[in-house]
Image (cartoon, rainbow, N blue to C red; front, side, top):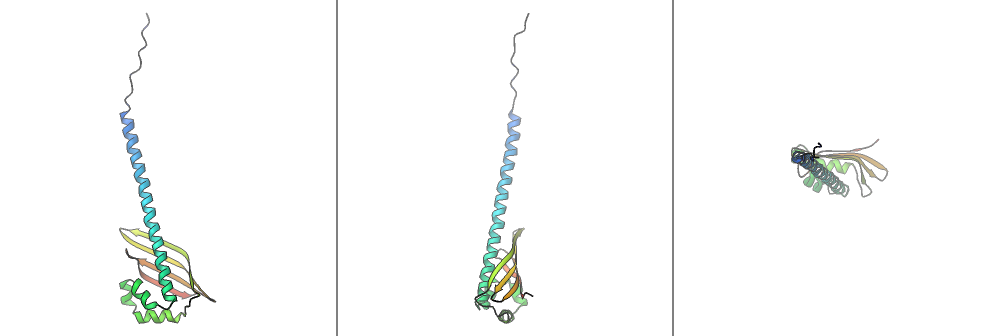
Length: 151
């Protein structure tokens, strides 16, 4: 006597689909997080470069008082009087031939506070200056400035 062929019982794959759904959701959240982080850091980097360009353009064009008022962090402004800043920039004898070249623009955001560091050179006709700008805060105000002749 032969036994009839009985099809095997259908496997319940509900648990498999739940696990795959959870793993897929986690992967999507990771990708979205990386994209958002890249945009935030990229925007801060572009913003730091733009502020550096504008600050440098102002001091090169003899508008040091405006650069001081617009871009210096209040803590720096307290320790560096405007007259000293203006006199220091005037002593560099910058002119319209000066153009900035950035070697490094690094931006970061920690606990909602933005920081950025910009380093490079300011190339003027026959002269070169090393520049370093450091920014802090959501509005990226300068908290450190170094502009020194090279060589």
